Image (cartoon, rainbow, N blue to C red; front, side, top):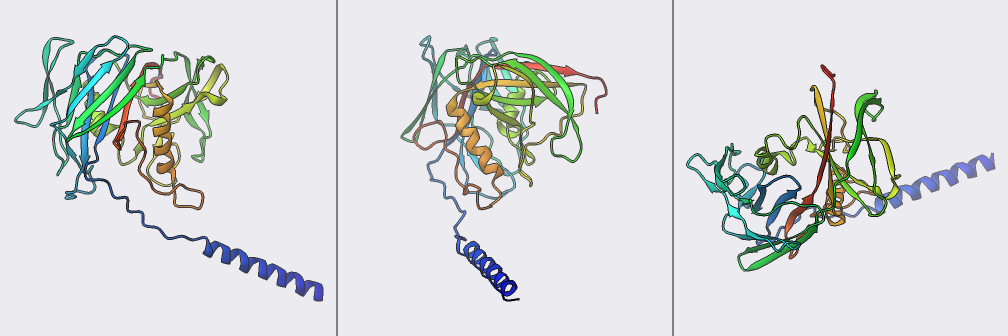
Length: 335
């Protein structure tokens, strides 16, 4: 009886101590993350597809009339220069002009014609902030340098276009992805070059990246992220074999709990998988972002923090240079 009592007492004391430690480890903190008044946000990508290439420059807005929308003021008076350091070609980007209907218009030097990009702005959103280059060409192994001058400050970034890795094959397999039952999921096979540490950005889509090139403008403003999630996944090849067989492609990150990769692929006759080469710097930016998306406030989750950019001088956003490899799977009336 004494042994039973002592065990119960020990158990009780242990539980009380564990509860005390849990309470004692709580550390309240303010999740408010003040953003400097002179902060700028840059986004855009140079690919190995023909120009034009589009970039958006903005700054966090203090006018939160519609907080459910992106609260950014567009910047139209910055000087943005991109230099191909491999060839010496230098281009001061056009700031696309707004028409009377708030659409974009610019001259396409690559195709020698005026181009109009039709936009539909969200309520309370400031139109503008689109910059275009037609003179820079994305070429594998070329290095590109970004220079932004705005209100007396200069921001820079430098990225090399890592060669693309061709996708050899795509198959659809029914795989248990944690959704409660097996789902039809795209799996790709490719040769992973062992001579270089490779990083990849993957996305599923319903059409080729070569179709509707102007749609990339919409992606910059509305499609890169949305209320449901971030439609990309990233891959570090550190633990990959040279011959990668049937790699399961995630649809991206969800913004709703539980914060985990999604696998609800679009219902269509075709699924396109796009695998883009990215630098280690870009991978680190995306990795930070994904960790913030997945954070659930638990003990082992990272604290809320602004994602560090690959652009200098405290800028936010990312300057990306990518070569694109893509493949599609066709199956009529796929469910």
